[in-house]
Structure formats: C-alpha cells, structure tokens
Length: 182
Image 1 (tube, rainbow, N blue to C red):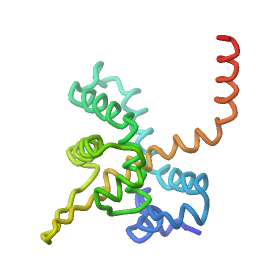
Image 2 (image 1 turned 180 degrees about the horizontal axis):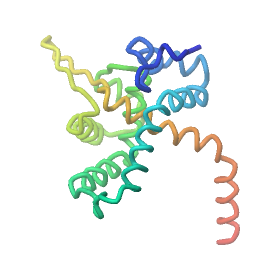
Image 3 (image 1 turned 45 degrees about the vertical axis):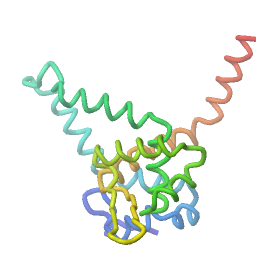
C-alpha cells in the first residue's frame, strides 16, 4: 500500500499524511494496521533519536542533570496529555481534520462546553492545534492539528498497539486483583 518513496525523514509526505490521517484509511485497513503503519513510518526518526540519546548517555561529558526547562515542559505536557479530553480531541481532529467547535463537541460525547473550551485553548497554547476564525457572519471558527499535534498523535499510536497486544493480560490481571480483594 505504501512504499519507501512515500516516506521522507520518517514522516509521511503531505498527500500521504492527508490519507493517513483520514478516517477512510482507518476503516480501509483497520485500526491496528493503521496504528502499526504509523509507528513503522516513524521508526527511522525514532531510531535516530534513540541512537542520539544513547550516544549522549555514553559520552563522558554529558550533564548530570536534565535542563530544568525541558523537565518542566515534559511534566506539563504529560499532565495535559494524560487528561481524558485532550487525547479524545486529538484523536477526533486526527480522524476528521478541520472541524468546528460544535462538531468536536458532538464527536467527543459528554464533554461540557467549558471543558472543551479549556482543552482546545491549552492545545492551541502548546502549538498542537490551530484555531482559525473566518470573517463571516455568523462567525465561523475551526480547529485543526498542527504538524506538531500530528506527530504527538503518531507517538501515541504505540499505546493503541500495546493495548491491542496486552488486552487479555490486563483483563486477566484485573480479574485476579478483584478476586483477591473479594
């Protein structure tokens, strides 16, 4: 379906990225194959990042402490991404592309307007989502993922793959835990 010529530096080409982020591709190949493909397209870049990380750790002159600014950013983003609505909104925008606020709310389910507004503002602040205001009456506002947001979504494809591969083990562990707690 996709070949090496479609990949540049580990990222899908623009036309391929549009197809990869489309809901039709997910339906065409199935969710597990879709996420597996996205993970594989990122492996070249991830491998080079892991190699660079390993070289840094092996180097004698690497710093003993992580840059406090980087550490703070990682903690903030993990806290934000771990939020239920953040991941749902990122997934909705990855599947459907540019959407209006009300469309995102409908697709997200039981999210309040206040929570959806807060989530979208934080995503916009972090550079993961772009908010576009169209100069029409009535006002039309749409949201879409930035390339940074798309890359974050791809990074979380590993969670889908892990969940698919580990479902039975997790269910078994939960049953054992619940049975022991009586």
